[in-house]
View (cartoon, rainbow over the protein chains, first blue to last red):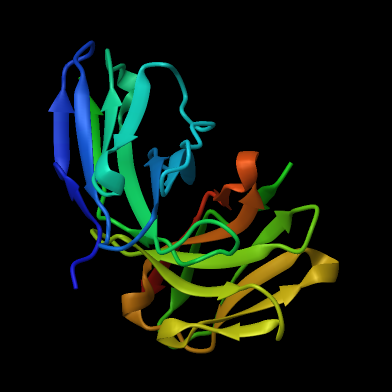
Length: 116
Length: 116
């Protein structure tokens, strides 16, 4: 079966532009996570979706960042008015279920964002 | 607050030598602990996890880890390293947050190089 896919794999943009990053989770996975990995850093949690529940947005670094998940499947992370400090690899992960127990998170290959 | 510390930023070992990667956590309750590996150009992959029970857990690729509550540690070990083990290794602890949603708190990673 297909794993988690992300697009684009690389994105170069100019400061001030908006970008959209896409994540296709594994079919049937109800939980979806976005993380940011900066050079030499660990993973920084951004946002978490679980089924139809309100998303946990506690990790979003500013109001320039937003995400949505349509139909409980595909998710889009949007960064408005990008800044150079937004340059990082953005990772998406999905798991079968997020509530009540921990389940393995399956990660996509990531989108490398470079803001010039 | 929950936290994960990986004291070694970079480790180099010779092929065939034994390996131990350290992980210390801070958590107020029984933690859920994970080790992930990120190989060059690859997505993050789960090596092993500890939820409860036997404190010595076996994972994929010949790795194992031991949960030591008294030391708040979950060190990763392998008796004989292969060149293909060169990668970035991340320790993570499962945490509760708002609304009973769950997310992982990540260490900054340990970069492993393997000499032939």
